[in-house]
Image 1 (cartoon, protein in one colour):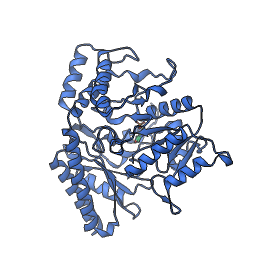
Image 2: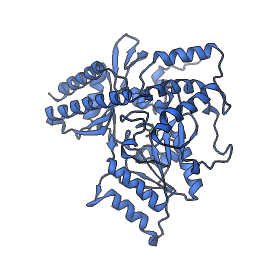
Image 3: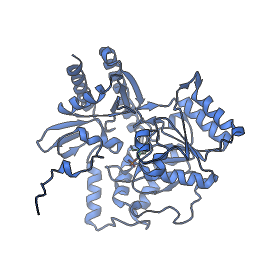
Image 4: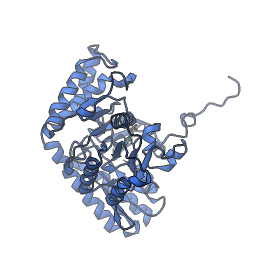
Amino acid sequence: LGNTKMKTFEELESTVRSYSRGWPTIFEKAKGYKLWDVDGKAYIDFFAGAGALNYGHNNETMQDKLVEYIRNDGLIHSLDMGTTPRKEFLECFNEIILTPRDLDYKIMFPGPTGTNTVESALKIARKVTGRDTVISFTNAFHGMTIGSLSVTGNSFKRSGAGIPLHHTVSMPFDEYVEDQDSITYLERFLEDSGSGVALPAAIILETVQGEGGMNAARLEWLKKVESICERFDILLIIDDVQAGCGRTGTFFSFEPAGIKPDIVCLSKSIGGIGLPMAITLIKPEYDQWGPGEHNGTFRGNNLAFIAATEALSNWETDEFSQAIQKKAHILSEAIEAIINKYPELNGEARGRGLMQGIAITKPGLAGEICAEAFKRGLIVETSGPNDEVIKFLPPLIIEMEGLEEGLAILEESIKSLIN
Ligand code: PMP
């Protein structure tokens, strides 16, 4: 074996490792809204697998259903074969989610992750319209593969991979630009056929930008974007990978805006218990794929279908949604209180639903607060272009007690750093 020094597991892993670098421990167990490390230390989860664990860790009904299915030799991997879990998921999704919301979509399985659904959305929009470009927004995050990265508004992530915005146009997200509402800016750009600006195939956006700093678009802004899309015959793609599945209080984040996007991207929590799964919802008239035109080996994850179907049962009544909104209200009041109590933070409240944050101007302070919170037993992360936003993304099932305990740890951490 020569003189090769044995490497630690940390040395073995690529430096690309992201979020979890700030949590220097080995985790062993998780239940609901809590995690425990190998030393038995407990942590409250305000991160929820970057939004993949809306229903919490290790839901017992999901566990039982998964174990029973495996023990009965149900198919685990089945590509596009028809299976009972796949059939049940499709039927339940239509019955519990689409029909009551008067939404009519074809349901596509584009691959296992968020970036796969975005890629499929961009591809079908370009195919259907016969156009190349896509408009996305400043601070958007849509994924790390070449297509989804090209509509991601983060130059650090994009430029290393050599992706200029050649097939995309980045527009200011819901904000004022040179005294103009960004809607006017967008309209003027689209009207400018004289200078040879090509009409885009689609506009893609997140209603609340998670990675981009918890920036929530106003509902009227979303409505205006939809009407611009109608006016110019452009497809509207809502990337609900992080903001969907109840995160903002309704199953789809765009529901309160009353819009009906042409294409919707879902992943993260759609898999119920943290299993990889993604779906792309496409208005039937735009579902113009030829058979096999977009395929992938891991699209038939039956375990994810089982957990996903169980998760949908939360949406059979309004109770779950109301509980999320109640907790969201408590969270926003707590954020306001912290901002007012600690003016040194120069904090700004961001977000909507259980997807909120505090933007802090002093460089590095948000990260220091998260690191301190970790030591005190709270898992919380930063987001935003300069990691300046403390991002609150607790599992939606968090109990009031857990929410309050987590917020108390956060406040202690802030106090210890600014005094
Ligand atoms: N879209 C949004 C809005 C996201 O937040 C993410 C992940 N953070 C993605 C797409 C990409 O998902 P994945 O990491 O599963 O590819």
